[in-house]
Image 1 (cartoon, rainbow, N blue to C red):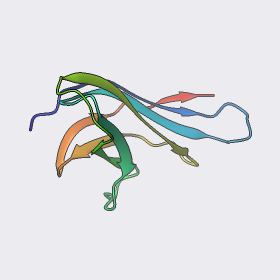
Image 2 (cartoon, rainbow, N blue to C red):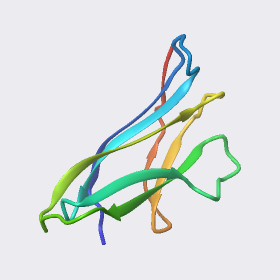
Image 3 (cartoon, one colour):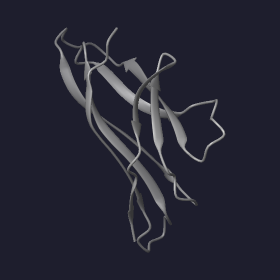
Length: 105
């Protein structure tokens, strides 16, 4: 299955706050059914670079219409270092690599 995706964005928010520095990754994914929920999770296997590898997963929740639908997907975690790149995979294949991780000070 070919996955359509767009508008990927990654940033590290270092603004003062209780949560501390936070990595945020977001994008839009096209799903085949309105009840399909996309999520990003940290991959079990990471490479030896300082980049982060995420897996795109899909879960069906409830009943839905069989219609192609665009859904937002997001990931957030505390980040104590400046992640230079984010690689997003699905079924072992790389979908996209985000090389421009914005840092907000």
